[in-house]
Figure 1 (cartoon, rainbow, N blue to C red):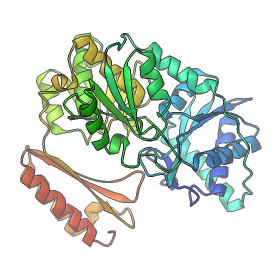
Figure 2 (tube, rainbow, N blue to C red):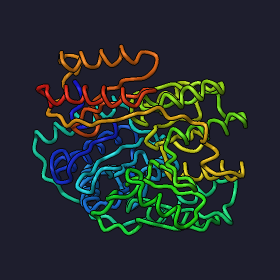
Figure 3 (spheres, helix red, strand yellow):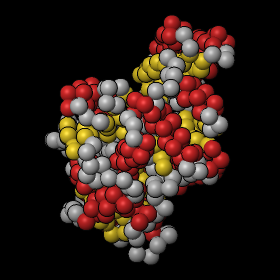
Length: 446
């Protein structure tokens, strides 16, 4: 049976509404507690949140469900998603729970699960937990929150770890950090300050409702302006839970996940640290990246969208580098998930060692025109079962054969159909993306 609650990145929705209503969140804690007790006699779980106003009450509901199963909880308070992943694998925790909706607005929230390995749980285990959640809801549960006190030593452990991975110092380097009013608002400035950089911080005053609001990795205007006005060497923007990072060069140019993977793959190959000369990315990465890497003897393997799937393929191939155009980049030597802070350290380190800037590192990346259109839908029905939609997709693919790509898929976290067209000719991109999107809007699911 297809999962109802878990998407590509855990459970996500509007805080206070199903599936993030108190009863379901409490049932999630109870179901997780029952699951981990099968693997450990005295289990302990770490919980962290981003800066959304709903984070604390959701954390207490999860903790209440866990407590009902006899599972202990340590609460990290506001911390990044990769921080929870690190703490889970580095400590004695059987699992970790991150409460965040990543780049979504503050009204949304989510529940992300990590196993003791630091990896997101496999689909089969998520499905077992989901069945127990639904069973408990059907039985009827009386949610009982469990009060939590923040253990401030936990995020300290994570910062010390990221610091330990850096080979260089950044004295004389000016960096602008856009923290997106999210989980990196304290950790980011501290990290780079301790590495010796001159840090200019923007969007680091969270109030529970301004996370991702016109700032962060999804809204780069403020960062571009700040980098240029401050004469900074680099800029980086994080999303709400800081598992992704998007960069801005000294000139104000956006350097996305594709460009980061190019710079990192080149540097790692030169050092002999790119096993199989292979990089793992997703179907969203630009065709220009794939063709440039091919000319340099680096193979790019594509997966479905989601850093979870990138990591699975990296493990299968033994790859050391993978990521997404959206800014999730996985350096397997150091982390089990995308980590914005760690990625920023690696990127600035690569530039520092090369004695150059981000403009120079990525100057030869030809980005093919690409457009993504999101179409809100009522139901996720097979798109190729809709004749008009299928016809527009086939027409675009036939016309662009060898010169572009068409990707139409459902979002794993929102009620959206995502239409992406990429080609050498920008006019063709505009034409085909709009025709496919209009066909979906006019179908019975739109």
